[in-house]
Structure formats: structure tokens, C-alpha cells
Image (cartoon, rainbow, N blue to C red; front, side, top):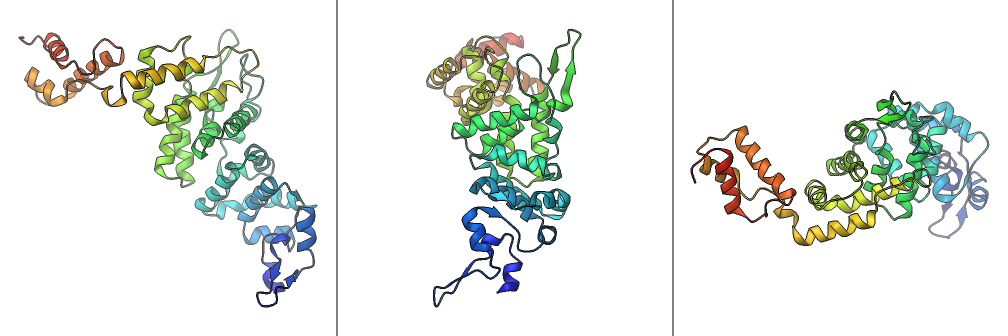
Length: 347
């Protein structure tokens, strides 16, 4: 029993109960005391315990912030010293531990701890690059602290795992896209596009499911769409519904959390108006109608052309008119007339 207890991760997990007598055993004589005082202590020298299974270092961070416990003296230093060891762990095991941290209200504290202990850079080094990256006049925090504030905002709103991942990754490309223009203003051109690709790469590396990878990357890629103009037009609502589908609400939640992470007094789009316009658009033009009234086969029948890129361009042009509200989704007659006009076909 003592040998078994020594192979455990922390002393609080060495307690045993005799299934026949009900007697509680504390083979190492430390487990019960550490359980009552909330101390994370390894049964053996922490360097040996962590060397045997490096995942225990991530578990230490998770237990600390999930349970509100404290590291025993020397434990944090041992994690820092052994921090390269998680390189030998399967990505699936790391993903599971990290996911459990992210699903707890203290996720941002766990992220700070992972960074400070040298663990985060072993499986997601992009986040360490955010540290100290200033953002200009609309921000009061660097990219790292802003990201964690947005994560806190999403958690406060009850966001699910996909939203929490999107909050973490939404500005992941800012360090690599940061420029300063001739006026001295800081810019991050196309950081949302670059960030979406970085998000895909990192989540795939950590063996997240492809549906999670794509949904999170889509939120990252689109998180600037509601900040690009002073108003939100009906055509913008239709395009958003077309592109985001059932992720529209998640995008608005992310944009809202991001806006609340800006400097106080920064003007942002009224998201209540956005929500109202989207709901009205859903009723007036369901997502299934936000396409060309004519199929490719119908366009070919009108033009007499064979399949090719030109047919696709015509279909796209019809869809754009629908999105702009200039062509009713079910107005096939007008659509046929337009195709005939564009291609110089007889009526």
C-alpha cells in the first residue's frame, strides 16, 4: 500500500479505505493533513513524481485553481525545472487537462499559471508571444491581458467551450501582424484571417475534433465583422446569417465580450440593434433563401453554355443581389430576365 501511495500524483490522492472494515488509511501520514489544509504536495520528491508522468504538472495547475489549494513549498519550482517534459505526452492527454481548466470559472488564472510555470509554451507557444504586445489607443491592456479579460467576459456570460477557445484565439495573430503606420498608430491588418489559420493549426495539433476546429476558426475569422462600420444594414445581416448560420449568436457573444475588454469610453456598435436586425432578418429571409433563385443547371439552360466558371460567377451575382435586397429570393422570373440581359440572350 505504501508503494502504491508513493506512485500517486499528490498526497491528497493517497488516502485509501478498507472495503471490509471501512477503516480510512493514510499510508504516507500526510494525505489527510494536506486534504484538510488544501496543499498540493507530491508523495515523492516533486522532480521524480513529475518526471515519471509529466501530465501531473498540468494536473497540479488544474487542481490548484479548481480546488483553491496552494502548492507545497518547492512544488512550483520543480514544475518550472521539469517544464520541457510535457513534450513526451500525447497531445490528447494535454488537450483533456487543458479543456478541464478552460471549463472552470478560474480558467484565466490557470492560463497565467501555465505561462508562469513554463508549461503553456510547450503546447501552445503562440500565447506567450502575446505578452507585452501593446495595442494602441483603443486598448488599455497588452494582447495577453486583453485576451484573458475577454475569456473572463465569456465565462461570466456562461459561454461554452467553443466560445472560450474563440476568446483565447481571437487575437492570436496580433503579435505577428503588428505594424505601426506613418502616424504612429498601431495596426494589426488581417489578424483575424491569419489568426483563423493559426487557430486551425494549433487545435488540430492538440487533436480537437474537426467540427470544433472549424467552428472556433470561423468565429476567430469573423470577430472583426461587426466593428468595420458605424451601422449594421439589413444586407449585412443577411450576409452574416449566410456565412455564420447557427453560429451567429456565438459571434455576437464573442464580439460583445471583446468590446467589454476595450478601454473605457471606446465607441462600439450597439449590439442590441444588431440582435434585433438579425432576428427580423431571420423571419423575413430564412437562411435557406439566401442563395441564388436559379441553380447552375437553370442558368446553363438559359444561356446554352456548358459548365464552367462563368456559370458560377452568374450564380454568385444573383446571390449578391438577394443579399443586397435587390432581388427577392423567390423571384425566379426576374432572375431569368437578368441572366438573359447579362449574357445578351433573347427574351
